[in-house]
Length: 375
Ligand code: TRP
Image (cartoon, rainbow, N blue to C red; front, side):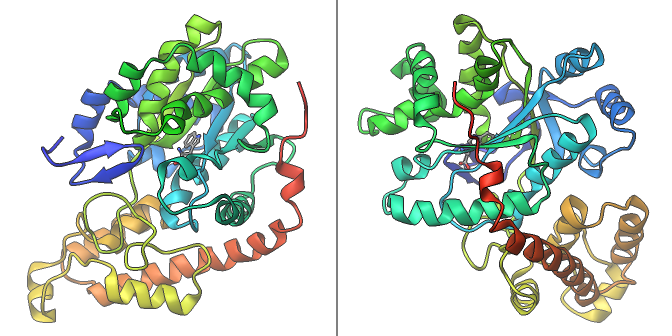
């Protein structure tokens, strides 16, 4: 990693070198063979795998071996309510939905509604409850199967989770969290305990089913330290280590280092209207184009640093041929920044129009998704 780059569950900053992340975190890159195996089972390929947007994993081969033997896994991912949902949040969830459909598996979706209360200065539980409800609408709107999707809300399901969290917490000592998260003597003890809560859904379905079920966690790479600790502990309390699959961060609109974050010039929110999307892209989206049209026609643009191109590649243009066509035209100067921006605005707005409709319908459906079973 570049000296000043940081990837932790609470902070992503600086220019992230993903090859170094792979080495430093100890995850493995996803090889062609695993991609082929997933495609064989799914009956189609997914652009996020083909394009290396999901780029790393732990124990993915084991998950596929077990699946091929007829032993299905469950999926686990989550969201700590702390603000509105933006496009960056949706990226791993869209892939998770595809995995659920193609592998026909259960998904446990955690909403740790105490996490950001513990880690942030000015966020109270009333505000978090509002975000929680809003965030749940976005997850439901993505189309997860209600029969196979279970929302776990930490403060609501505390009775179910706490005993299991204690089993994990008993095996974590302060020096482990200090080493993994950079905590110190001033860190509040709630934050120090928190990893135990995030570990729980990786084995809770096994506890409920009274048999071990493999778990696969799709997540953005910054969450890995939680699951590194989880994986260390699981065999010691009689559970499988969860497998995981990691994605890149969606870059902020401005093209700044780090990931899309919830400030207006950095993010497009799922609730933004057409005009807001257009305004933000036109005003903020960092362009890989040249300063003048003449220069652009002569030298062409640079899609690698162009935010619109990156959004198309990572989220909005799953068709490889169409993407390659845009890339070619932009690179050779045939396509101007304004044209690329227009294409991107249209794509995002088409997506958001549908999403917002489904989000509206989701308001009546929250109860279908919240886990109701008791141990
Ligand atoms: N810590 C995550 C966040 O800040 C939320 C989360 C809980 C999560 N469990 C997870 C994310 C599992 C990915 C996978 O939003």
